[in-house]
Length: 71
Image (cartoon, rainbow, N blue to C red; front, side):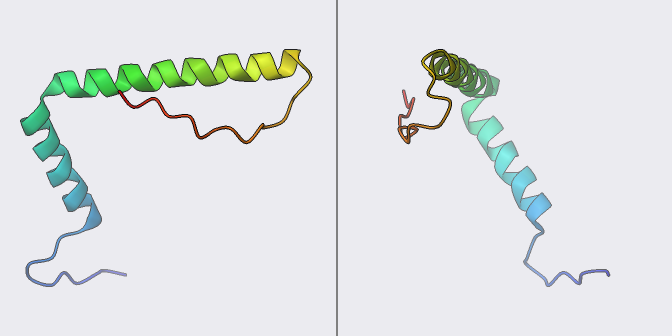
């Protein structure tokens, strides 16, 4: 099924591309490097927490996943 596009509206794909280009232009490529690094650090923390939970016999989620790494 083809979707008809009304004048003045854009697809989700077009909106995402436009937003991504705006972020790139405003913040530069260093921004993506920083957020990628922060994401990698958080993944490492979660893996370590999982290993510690397995070692202590916890095995399940403690419900304290609300910690955030916003800096």
